Amino acid sequence: MTSATAREAWRSAPTRAGSDVATTNASHFAAQPPTKKLRTASPGSSSAPTPAPSHAAPSAMSNTGFDEGPPKAEIITLTSHVLSQQQRHPIATGDLTLLLTAIQTTCKFIATNVRRASLLNLIGVAGTANVQGEDQKKLDILSNDIMINSLRASGKCAVLVSEENEDPIIIDAGHRGRYCVVFDPLDGSSNIDAGVNIGTIFGVYKCADDSEGSVKDVLRPGSELQVAGYCMYGSSANLVISTGQGVNGYTLDNGIGEFILTHPNIKIPSRGKIYSFNEGNSLFFHEPVVKYLESIKYPSNGKPYSARGYPSDKKSKNGKLRLLYEGFPMAFLTEQAGGMATTGTERLLDVQPTDIHQRVPCFLGSKEDVQDLLTFFEPSK
Image (cartoon, rainbow, N blue to C red):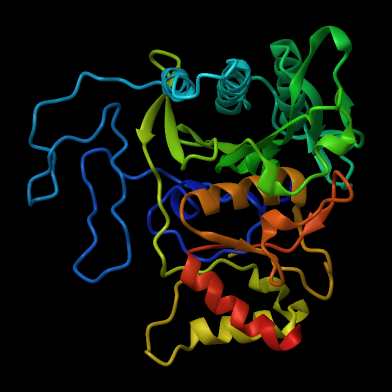
């Protein structure tokens, strides 16, 4: 992946309550908020509180913003949290729970290797290119192999689509399940040498009832996703997941080797204060995007947005995000957190894929900000 991907999602979309509009290369990764404080919105502010990443549910807060109650002993792991949700559905088979277990195991393994990349000689180019023509890093290839093998071994997958593989992977009958996983095993891998945040993005479909597993099972709108999420690797490993019932964030506790629920019920405010475009390509931007940027940089109220991302432009007419394993998962998470995701002309999750590596323009973030953006596209319809 290019260095423009993988920057701010833990902070800006949708894991930070102050998320705003962004046209991203699907993954924005950044640092998590502090442990002891809970930043509350001022009266009349549209920003929701930023949840405190503790191992337990937050206790009562004083008017100073600090937790003055006794420490909580309850620890909610990703596995226990998913199991508790499964119990609410009597017809659930547990297959999706086992699949999510395989995904979190993969994320733990990749997180370990990311931290030790220099020591294990995993820094640098492997000498090969992926299907998009991008140089593959050594860690790209290792992460891809880890994810494919883990998902195959789970026995719950029928089809796998990876950014690193030109063709879909059809699981052999002996290990075949009913789910299809689309993923970018290591987004932002060109940043590995610089030691900044990178991550894994994934989406999960369920095979059609009359299908044994084929590429048709993944060439479906993002609105049919069963699960979407990403894991960010940086100062900590943060896993953000939605099963269609809201968005939750988990932080890897290396001491016990478990992802702990630290950011429950993540929400995006209706309006934010940050926009995110790669304005180095502004020469190629279409007119609606140019006019929108002018409106937020030189607003009538004298309060401009602070600034990164990727719409389609005259050079990249189809956009830069890969629809299946970048655009759809991030759009799914954004909508589940109360935000909005669009191509500029239609809801992103309603796009019908025609190719597993298809690209798409993407605008996602706070609902009112995205709605403002859409007004600039209306004359061009």
